[in-house]
Amino acid sequence: MITLNKFGNIYNRLVCSITGLSTDIKPTNMIEGMFISNGSVFTEIDTGNIYCFDAENKIWYCENSVPQLINKRTLNILAKNNIVAGDTIYTIDQPSKFIDNEAGTGDLVHYSSITEDDKFIAICGGTTTANSFVRIYYINSDLSLTLVNSITDWDGIPYSVDFSHDEKHFLVTGTFTGKAKWYSFNMNTGSTTFITNLYADAETTALDGTIYIGIISHTDRYITLCGDFTGEAKFYQIINDEVNFLSDFYLDNNNTVLDAMSVVGQFNYDDSLICLGGWFTGKAKLYSIGINGTLTYLQDLKADVGTTVLSNYVDYAKFNSNGKYLAICGLFTGIAKLYKIENNVATYVADFKADSNDTALNGEAYYIDFAPNDNEVIICGKFTGKAKLYTIGGSYIVYLNDLQANSNGDAITNDCTSINFMTNKNYCYLTGYFNEDMKIYKLETWAYSANDGVVTIGSTGNIVQGARIGYATSDIVNENEGAITTISSVISVT
Image (cartoon, rainbow, N blue to C red; front, top):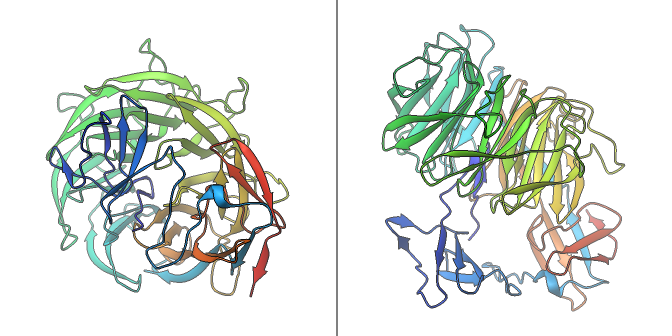
């Protein structure tokens, strides 16, 4: 069973974080009214052991032991400790493959969001009030799209859309009257019903300015609003259909107000952390969320392993599905950076590069996201190539390839604005300033041949965290021992 625990600008499903004693019976269906989804985590208080849940087989696997990975299609997936020098990885085709264009209207798409069950995808955009739009499409089995809902009559431009993880609500933000609108969502038909505008405070003070993005947290408990408005960034709590203001964000724990606009407020997997990015002093900040929804400033993210501050603004931030990594992108020196998260502290790991020759990215990056297996990352924006695929593992980032504009292998020449990975299929949708509202890509497969002759086929990166695909040499990072093992050359298969 493969599930996408995150997509686009949010995590894609409710992954439980459970604590208990080793003597407790681990639940395999529900806990306190919540279904235990694939990839949920159980931490034993008395032993420190961490277990990950296999929802298809109703089994808890201990992460502290050597995993026994068996592919459900009779293919033998080798555990990373079984990989030794002399093994060979073969790549089949390119790591990312263009599939199709969809819903082409030539409109400028600012943002997109996909439902947890891969059933609907929403886009928003426009350059003027006259051509602004919010559209919701049904995703057919062949990945083609059918328009089922078009929200019209905007008196401003919608800049972001977001589905709640339980697929009961829908959020739109922008420059229009109200700035942030909250809808109920019908997961059977794709229809929406307006509920309320979000307000600037605990009263009914209207939001002013522009709300560039609204993000619903992974547990559907919270919302962040970011933009260029009074307060610059705001934090809300969701209770059923209601959305209640909690607080503004501050530069520090002294209630120093943000001194410039914010652009993103991203949650980690269990809603215990938020990364706030924008134009304000520090550019990117980490906050913890208390039990009662109280925000506590933790740190500013640094540009390197020292104390160098980020040189320019941050456009986007994203945690991976287990909260161990955080990626940011924007217009600062380096354009896109990876951080490791330990004990609520973000430590710089490395910059993303434009190619395998260590060339720096040469333009602004609008969006960054982790693929379902957390081993791949796609960055998109204004730089040469517009959208790039990477694999990560340990302290390594390796460039794989540029996403192509079509099946002819032509380069994308128009800026790209967002990415959405599907939950149950190895595909993603790319939006941008091109004639098609969305482009569809498949993360391609690899074949692995071990010394013992066992051949395994699966999706890129699933064999081992940190597999280096598409290079003359392939390094495997053994995170358990902190050692690097070099295996034989990668060979392309035609």
